[in-house]
Amino acid sequence: MAVLCRLIRARPITSYTVRTFCSPYSTSSPPSSPEIGAISPSLASTKTSDGRNVQWVFLGCPGVGKGTYASRLSKLLGVPHIATGDLVRDELNTKGPLASQLSEIVNQGKLVSDHFIINLLSKRLEVGEAKGESGFILDGFPRTIRQAEILEGVTNIDLVINLKLREEALLAKCLGRRTCSQCGGNYNVACIDIKADDENPAMFMPPLLPPPHCASKLVTRSDDTEHVVKERLRIYNEKSRPVEVFYRKQGKLLEFDLPGGISESWTKLLQVLNLDDHEDKRSAAA
Ligand code: AMP
Image (cartoon, rainbow, N blue to C red; front, side, top):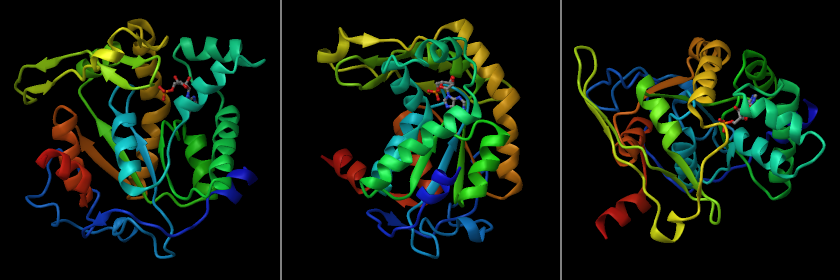
């Protein structure tokens, strides 16, 4: 843990516009304006009092879209997006001595050991530190209470965004996920169109289709099969739900119900976080 401790450091930068950053209210019943709400001191700014970059965490079930929104926020805030699932897949691709053991665990939808994942994350942070990175948006970590406690012991997490989506959409989204084997672009061929019922509004999430030059090179993650996704959802409920409770108790959890597809959800997420995406506005205006 010493490595994590040494690496998670403060360094000031910012390349985004922050309006007054408000409370960790649930988007299930948002106040009429994002500016209204009880301000939690720990969340009142996207820069800490010592001027270091944000240290945020994304929580949420498999398929909810953590990677999509974490990656967009990381570009906007100028901090690295670190997805522990990607670190595990990189490790698998090295075909090193642990690869076959690791692939068995991942392909069964199980979690790798806390010790192993912390080692991988430590190494990633070490490489980042050497390149001058500071701050982070973690995606897929922590996933157990033990991981959350270890992280808590070595650094201060400013904000935890808990992405939420109805279970029927989660399975469809995992099964529709595709990656271009050449450029690494992420797409989703699922078209989610759920009718309203007595408790929930209708939900429409259009597919995110690849451009023609990627279409013939799409691959599916080996753990995105129906059986394995169901197991990953079960494990999330068993091991990772308590992590939501852990951060809720600390007043760091921002509950965010995805309202629909990426464009609608991104706009709403920025609004809730009180951030401006100048690039997004420019491209929308073009
Ligand atoms: P993901 O891409 O986040 O769905 O992660 C893919 C797989 O990597 C998971 O199903 C786990 O086997 C492993 N993994 C990723 N992050 C963690 C973590 N924090 N703790 C344990 N296992 C992890």
